[in-house]
Length: 343
Image (tube, rainbow, N blue to C red):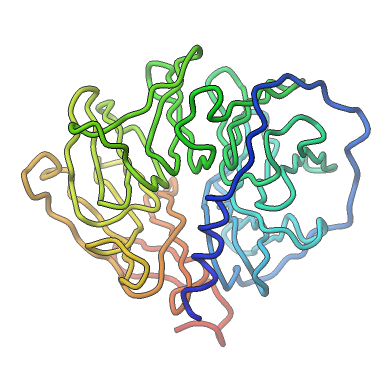
């Protein structure tokens, strides 16, 4: 039973429906005000899916607190504020602060919520979203907001444009989105990574022409390389060649300020019953045949969300014995759960 929760949520992304490409104008009556947020001295204590940081240095956390349903929290260095408690029980999976300081909350069961600090606006398929299951949010350099989940949606502030397999996506199950230095949009999907150049989707396949499977994350490093993880390990793509960096899986990937690559994922070989770990790949050996990797913490069943904060600390989320949100300062790991829940 200890593995059931995370893998049921993972498998939810496999089942999808196609919505096709469309353009829909938004109604003007889908915003409302709510009561004050809930503030506590401790953080969420179950599963952490994604961790971000806002312009003021606050930590934004999408994860469960006391039930299997998710919430979104803001940590200001002293207190945790539950930003979504007033929205009812939803499975919140991701959070984004846009360039104007507004917040976006993605859910697996109720589309997307927009929050300007005073009022909420709710976007679902009724307003033009591709699907009500949303797992990732990203803002591109043009200010468009992208949503991934079951299909891909782009919101320009007025209307949605949707993309599915009918438009070239390798799979409607889209888990992560980034924009590279050239303006191409990269998407991690169930059937591998792909990029969108504004006109068409290009699907990446290995040297034998086989698709990468079950990709959860994709990033671009400072040198312009694309990193992603699939069922077979951690990969680096330099624009023409794929290099398998590790057998370890990668649910989340970040590059820190020093050029080290950090991952959360299943240990080798990746699988459901294996232990997961928070790992750091040393930047000095990244291009060696066998890069040096340090396991910061490991154990079943999973480590998920991952962030380097402005102060250089590493924030990560876990499940099971390591559930909740944690901060690693290079020497020690701080557990932000209630004392009775800490290990």
